[in-house]
Image (cartoon, rainbow, N blue to C red; front, side, top):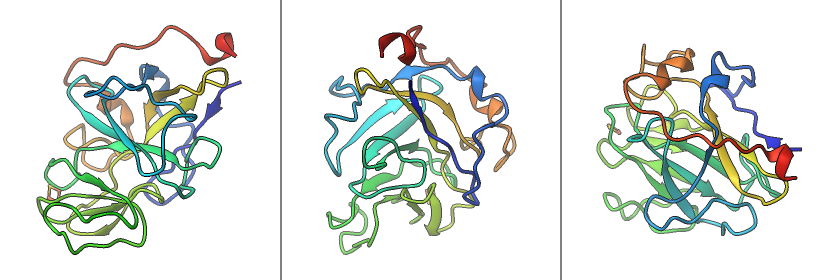
Length: 198
Ligand code: FES
């Protein structure tokens, strides 16, 4: 059986039955630069991979936080993924893990928790808590990627996006995530299922 992440809305509520989520491709997460496959057995604490989803030009991070997180997968519930498109004006936030170096724009920053930090105007997203905005001008959390773990291999698939919609998709802050699928080319989807490989 696959482990399916629940996805919280911006208030932390359970929105597993997100409208239109079945339309999203099921996509094996592999790092854009190295080709490394996201796997619960090999990701290391504070490591992140980048991947495009649901469109082939839209970046996301998958991160192993080392601390449990809302909707986290893996044995410690500490693996989460989010859109890397800032909800303020569309820059690309960076991952800053707790105890690690600050972002390039604010080297003295030292967060108590792992965050995504946008250096354009200082928006900070708490990735342990569904990307709740904890600093800066972003009006909404960056949307969380729904993750599914293949119980046989430990590989991690993206299977959907939770609300709110990705920056500049549909109405800002909308819960209609079908808008995330429009305006570009979907990434390729896998035809395999976790049940068949368990
Ligand atoms: Fe990210 Fe402005 S674009 S804070």
